[in-house]
Image (tube, rainbow, N blue to C red; front, side):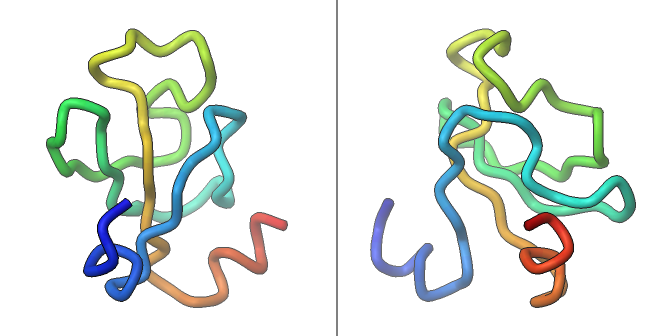
Length: 70
């Protein structure tokens, strides 16, 4: 992931289950380079996603989102 995205708070997604709580909307980066928004359950986060639209990174809108997901 480019350093500027890391500096903006983007977190790499490992291909597992959705790492965020069941509420809210978060920005996601798709493998094809598009940025989108995701509600819990909207995108397929795990290995079942088609390769061109799987989520490769996400960014919590609120710092506590990472803590809530842990």
